[in-house]
Image (cartoon, rainbow, N blue to C red; front, side, top):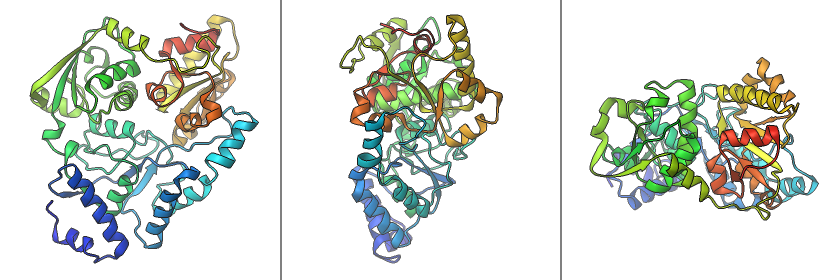
Amino acid sequence: MYLTDEQQAVLNGSKGETMAKVMKTLVMYGETFGADKLVPVTSDYNHLVTSFGLKMMKPVFDLMQQLIDAGAISSQKFSVDPRPLDKNVPANFLQKLIFNKFMYSTQESYEQQLKELGLMNEDAFTCACYLDQVGNKPKKGDILSWAESSAVVYANSVLGARCNRNSGIMDIMGSIAGCVPHFGLLTDEGRKATWIVKVECAKKPEAQLLGSAIGMKVMEDVPYITGIEKWLGTELSDETCAYLKDFGAATASNGAVGLYHIENLTPEAKELGTGLIAPDAKVYVIDDEELARVQREYPVMWKKPDGAPKLCFIGCPHMSMQQLKDWTVRVEEGLKAAGNKKVLVPTVFTTAPAVKKEFEKTEFAQRLKDTGVILSYICPLMYMNNPLCKSMNVITSSNKLRTYTTSRYYTEAQILEIITKGGQQK
């Protein structure tokens, strides 16, 4: 790997032992994946995946403290994934005991470390850091050192930035050093599509379901998707970006997609068109029956598959402002049609703290509260890590949450019917 004179000097200890270790870590990471050099990080902000003060992560806390003590602070401010705890989210006494005493007992001290390392602000805890209210939206062509798979795939695909699927800790290393290894999705060749996905559905496909099907098929490869622009249009409106947020999260979690192109819509596809497709690209055709098959084959992890749902999470990744408003109306209308005043299943909508604050200034906030829905900034996945929570019958419209936990996936229409009318979809 080629290093500049400055990078080599840091590796040799010009900025101290700790910075030398940071640089060595990045060099080893790059060499593992065949990187030819280190390139400067150019985004205004970074995003870290590790947000939770889990007791078993003591080595991470020790490492963070070494960085702080040595003055090896991030050259960028950063956002970080959502907090794992919110007292407003339903939990019984034993669940709360496990959360606070045995799982996330170091949350407060860890958040202090994040602040000392360069946290953007108190509200910068979200997996959807690119939402306008949060303020961490990179520009086309920016080189990033992000982790969090759903954020990386959004930045690459919708915004046209460049970032590999980095792991936790590697994200902060790149930010501190100000450079990352040049390989994979940072290269022109690595951003070419090796799959052509033809969407031939009769109706607009569910974002999370379509993303799941593509992710499980192409895995870590780059797909070029055609046929969906008839529903999404050719401009990145708020509605379309929300769809792509959820779609991308499913491709990244049900597979390992870090970048997708959508014909006539995403930045590079509009600029380069079919020139993005590799000569030997494979083809995958998706129709309504294929999506139905994918959903049918999801395993049901509940101990009692026919049991009633006990909790519902919507918002993994975090919901946008427009999604919150749209869902408020949908829940109101669903309850009115069913003759009910409040949701029949405890339901939690999750969003970024900054979005939550802005939403609470609108008339929709009280309207949502009147339906019985809880609005939270929590990470549903971290909630489900509690062994007493994973045994619950939890439903969700998130394919990411379904993949990583025991929660059960339903489409948005199915979820709406369950929480407003009661019962369970088969």
